[in-house]
Length: 276
Image 1 (cartoon, one colour):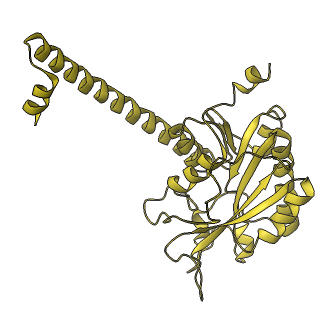
Image 2 (tube, rainbow, N blue to C red):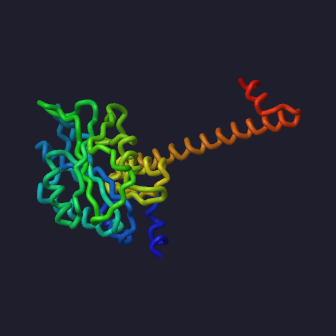
Image 3 (cartoon, rainbow, N blue to C red):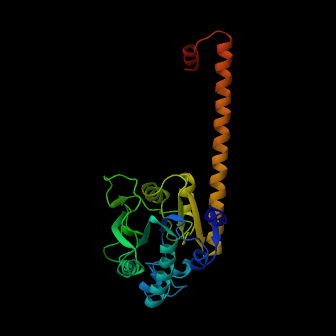
């Protein structure tokens, strides 16, 4: 019954308020909560939507990133409350953040009832925003539903992950590299597991899930980014189909050659020699 009720969410980019959407998702149905929420950056940088500075271009920013500290805390508490409800008992979560909102988020995570397991550091390999010592990293809070949680990466993984950031042709102001997101998904899920990202943005989590044969639930409040995410998925599916057709054609051609040579009495070694 629960599987049927999940069908309308699985492998879909859903346009809407993530709290309202998550309220309709069944309890204990998701394996991994992985997201990059708004950092409340406009408030933290003392800016208003539409302003520009040498540090931040708020004219091209996104929704729910200019709340008061209290509003932001309440907002994230509501998101995390729903996350705790829909995660399986052995499920876990990863949430990107920066040093400014880490203290607030870590406290909210604990108050909701999660167990904080680690603090990961994403090293971007090149400097980003700032006036003095400029940022070259972001933080990722790793937390679990309970004492037992799934971890498939072995025990030789560092909590510092080096992965170059996207520096050009961004589809979203805070777009994360697919390789980084893949790294997390592979470590914490298995094939056909369900990953939810309630702040999907331009769809990187969905793309990574599809490539790894995981199922995803993607929620995004901005209609424009929803369309970008859907377009990326369509393009990826088109590439996969073209690759599959190319493989079938190559395989058919190769099979025909083997059959032809076998028919005329040549050995497979002879085929290799001719092919070379």
